[in-house]
Image (cartoon, rainbow over all chains, first blue to last red; front, side, top):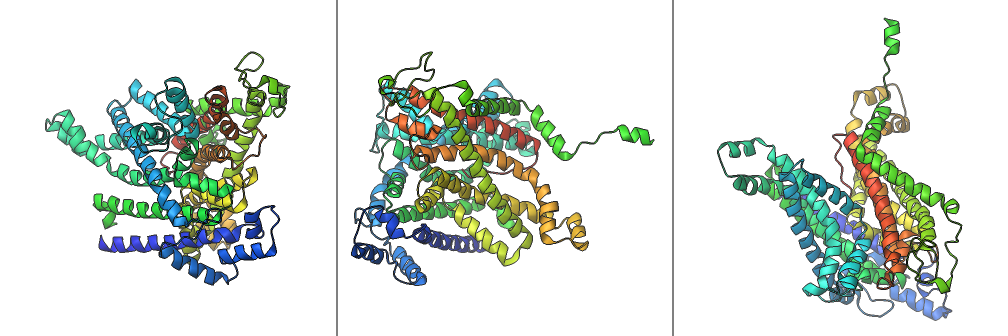
Length: 308
Length: 292
C-alpha cells in the first residue's frame, strides 16, 4: 500500500506540474500580441501597452516568467485581475464556497435519487420498472443541463412559483433548482452504475450461499450485495464531485449565481487572463487532488488492486 | 465439392457488425430520429420559405400558431425556421468537434502505443495533464486563448476529446503490437507506418467505434453548451444553444423560446446515444468510459 501511495503521489505532482505549465502558457498561446487582445480596439498610448506588458511580466525570458509564476503560485499569489485590480486568489476565495455548496448539493441529489432508483431497478430486473428506469437514464444522459434548468424554472418558478429563478444564497430554497439542474443528469449515471454493479454482485456465489443459508432477503441485499456493489460507485463519486465543479459553470451562469464557473466565463469575455488562469488552475488542482484521493480510497477498499 | 464451397457466403466482420447494429431496436429508433433531424435541418429551404434572420418587430413574442408552429422570438423571427436552420450548425459543431478530437487522439495513441519508451511516457503524461481539466473548463481555457467564435468552439471541443481517443487507441495498440501477425508483418519488412495504418488501426476500429458514436452526442452537447454561454455562434446566426441563451431572458413570457431549441439538442443527443448503446452491445466485451 505504501509503495502504491508514493507512486500515486509522484504521478499527481507530475500532473500538477504539467497543469501549471499549461495554465502559464495560456497567455503566451494567444494569437498575436496578448496586450492587443486585452486592450482590444481602444486607442492607447505606447506607455500604456508597456505598462501592461510590465504588469504581466512579459519582458523577461520565458523560463524566468515561469519560475516567477510557479513560485508566486506556490505562495498563493495568483496575480491581479486586469479589470478590477483585485488579487485573483481573493476573488476565487470569495466565489469558491458558493460553487462548492452547489456541487455538493448536486452530488447529494445525484446519489439519493441514483442509488434508490438503481437499486430498485436491479432488484426488479427485467420488469417494466427496470425498462422504464433504463429508458429514463438514457434520456437523463442526453438532456442538456441548461435545458433541464430552464424546464425546471418554467415548472417550479414560473408556473408553481415555489422557487426563485435567480438565486445567490446557500439556503435550501436558493439551492433547490440549481442543485436539481446539476444533479439530475448525474442521477441517471449513478442509477445505471448502481444497477449494473448490483446485477453483477447478485449473481455471485456468495449471494447464492447467503440465500441458501436462509438469510432474509433484506439482509442479503443490504448487508452482502449492496456493500460490495458500492465499491465501484465510490470511484465514481469522487470523479463526479470534480466533474460537478466544472458543470457548475453553466448552472451558475444560468441562475446568475456567484461562483468560480461564472467568474471564468465573465473573465473570458473581458479578456482578464490572470483571472481565467487562476480559476482554471484552481479547478484543475482540485480535480487532481480529488482524483488522487479517490484512487487511494478505491485501492484501500479493494485490496485486489493493491496486490496487482 | 467446389460448387458447395462457392455457395457459402462469408460476410466480413464489418458487415456482420453493421447488421447486428441495424437489427437492434434502439439503433432503429435512434437512426430514424437522427435521420429526421438531419433531413429537417438540411431541407430547411424546402420546408419553409421564411428567412431565419429577418426581423419583424410587430410579430415579436407571438405564441405558436398555424402560421408560426413554434411561435416567434423577441425580434419577430419565426422560431420554426430558426429551429430548422439552427440544426445544421448544431449537428455540424458536434461532428467537426469529434472529428478533430478523433484525428489527433488516434494519431497520438497509435504513436504512443507503438513506439513506447520516452515518447509514450511523454504523450501519456500530457494526456493525463489534459484529463485533469474538467471538459468544459478545458474548452473554456482554449476559447480564452483563441477567442470566442464557432470555429474556435469546434477546435476547443475537439481538443477536449483528444485524451479519451488517445488513451483508448494506445491501450488497443499495446495489446495488438505483440500479436503474431504484427510480428510477421515486421519480419516481412513492413515499415512502422504501414503496420500502424494497415494492420493495427483497422483492428482497433471496433473498440474506437463506441467512443466515436457516443462522442458525437457528447460533442453536440458540449457545442450547444458553449453556444449557450455565448462563446460560439455570433448573433443572429441560428444555433440551438445560442437560441436557448437568447430565449432564457424571456422565459416568463415565452416558453416556446426555450422548449423547442432545447428539445432539438435533446433529441439529437438522444438519437445518437441510442445508436451508441446498440454499437456498444454489438461490440460486446468492449468496455469504455467517456469522460464527461
